[in-house]
Image (cartoon, rainbow, N blue to C red; front, side):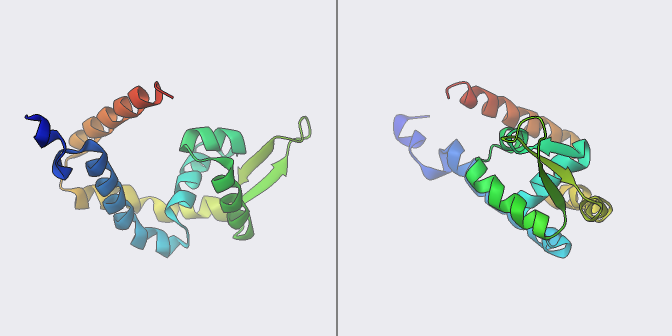
Length: 146
């Protein structure tokens, strides 16, 4: 590939990732609207469905969201009664986030989301898995520069 080819939009990995992220988020939207949550809230729930509890710091690291973004979102989720925020009795700087019964109830309703999106993707489960592993390697390599 010539040097000038590298500067074409269609050859930019960053643009392909950006466009695919936006497209995939759009695919999630109808499912998540049915649950009454946003995509970032869905990501929080994915962690809490698995762990039942997390600290704000752990969520921030796992989701790659800063606390300035995460804290207001968690407050909204608490107002929706999806999570409960509690300061740690051992260290008041630590805020624990626990999933509530209402948050757990969304789990059953969300079970169809991955399969529905997989069916819409046109890719096999193996192709999705391989692509996801490649993306994680890219993320890890890029994060090594931070």
